[in-house]
Image (cartoon, rainbow over all chains, first blue to last red; front, side, top):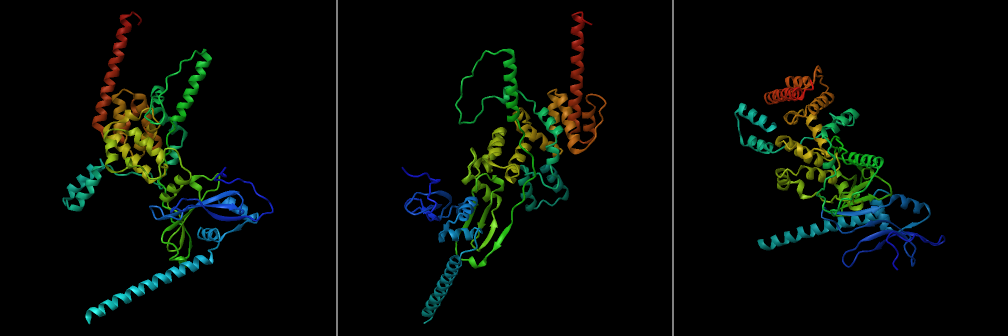
Amino acid sequence: MLPPASGTGIFVNSSEKVIRLLRQGCTNRPFFHIRRKNQHRPVIEQLGTFDPMPNEHNEKLTSLNYERIRYWIGNGAHVSQPVEQLLGLAGFFPIHPTSYMTAWRNRRATKENQEKSISVEADDKNEVKQ
Amino acid sequence: MAAFRLVSKCLKAENLSSAHFTIFKRLLNYSTVEYDEQRDPRPSFFNKDIQNLLRTLTRVDLHKVFRRRKLGDEKVRDPEYKFMTDEELQEALQKAQQKANSLLQIPPVVPARKPISKILSLDPELQGLETSKMVFTDITFGVKDSDRLIVVRQPDGTLCEAEWEVKNRINQIYFPQKGRSVKPPKMFQGTDFEDLLKRQEYEFILDCACIQFEPNDPDYQRITSITYQHINDNNGFDKLRSTRHFGALTFFLVWHKNIDNLLLELIETCYADEANSLIELYSKIKKVEFEKTNDLSMIEHYIKKCSNKKGALELALQAYKEMSHQKQNIEKGIKTAHGMS
């Protein structure tokens, strides 16, 4: 039988616990539950959801149960990097360095693309003149 | 009336430019009237005396309160007949009265809310990370919808609190309420709304608005105010009697000093005591004193002092006086004919 979406609540005290994303959607439609879980064991508790596909208002929706997240972090749970990034963007954690790096890389890529397109246009014009 | 006044003003000024034309083309329909925070209606509305007066004016008829309604989701059941002792009957009647009271609770009248513009942090270093907004919702158990923390990370890196419109949508997505939809239905906009008004489906509109919106929502106040104005102009008061919306309608009319049509209807249908309580309500909310020497003196004083439709009201009152006089005469005649005087 599949464990319930809200988690089983069963865990071993000594095992390591991680708050991480768990892919739940179907093909081409990712949807994540943010869950506390130890590997190879059923989920302990669901702490939220994350939908990476923007909706019609161009929003990505995330829900987080801050109270339970606080509780589990207080009990020594680890947080995976994607969840750390999400919590950073939510203002719950300090912003993760990876977020800054990705933002900077994206900005650089767009700038390079723009420069390339400008230079290509300039070359085209020169050819027409000749 | 507002449209009429504006038109006459324009005619006086004698400069009917195209700009003016567009203005009163819009005003010929009804314009939104909101309750604002500078003139807060809450202290008057939640006053116990005023609530009692509004309840009296609702004219509760239990047959209408417990009538079959167009709800769509419930099957019609056969009535149940029971044998009861007198005590049990009294108890059952009391229970029905309590149920009616809860069904007739007047939707609260509160000022329209202000837009939220609270910025939590500015991080321009995050520009380019996302092309869409990120909405984060706190789904902690036991938090009220109005207190729930919902924040938005904009593509330019600003972290701010979500606007009301987003908040309502997200609350409905994560904590759905029965009967409410994520997008406001089409019946509240444009021709669909006008069509409903034309068909005088006032109760349906107001019930749906109560489910879909919070009472401090500007959209709720737009819909209700337009409906109330339409009822007032088309004399549709009887459609709302014995429903929870009649109190809110009366409060709206009194608050905006527009009770002449309602008063006229009450006098014409010979409900003088209700007309009196309407004037009492007016004096309590608007802090105006009226003389109280005999039964109809308050109404007469109101007509002299504050009314906009003096002619019609005076005529109706005169007719009412004559009719009650005739009634007394007939009763007297019957009594003498029966040899009782």
